[in-house]
Amino acid sequence: LEKVYAAKGVLCEFEISPGVQFHGEPGDLQELLGNLLENAFKWARSRVLLTVKPSEVVPNRRPGLLLAVDDDGPGIPQDKIALILQRGVRGDERVQGHGIGLAIVQDLVRGYRGTLGVRPSEELGGARFEVQLPPGL
Image 1: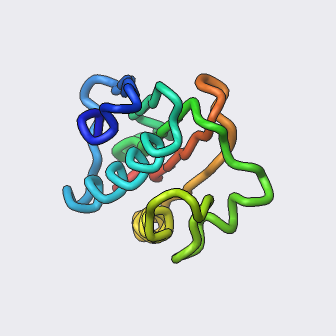
Image 2: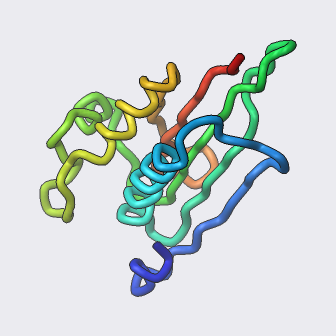
């Protein structure tokens, strides 16, 4: 994505905990991160941050997983969040896209019994998309 958006000069930073694992289909992880990062690069002014770390820890179970993508773009108004998660709806019709990426992310997250949250990014000032996957067996 840094090559695709090279003209924008977007820098992608990573905060990935050592040993963290996604327990699922590799294609699902690629789809999740691909869509979230693509949107972040599209809207970012100059920075994107990917955070991956264990979340909820339950004895005798593998830990939950937090995947978060932050950007320093314009953010998303609270009243538009539910709208952009619908299939075929784009946040801004002037920007290229099909409006299905976030709906795909939401479907995948639900399939893993997780949640998808969208809120302002405290760290970068734009949007934060946060996927929480529950602990496993």
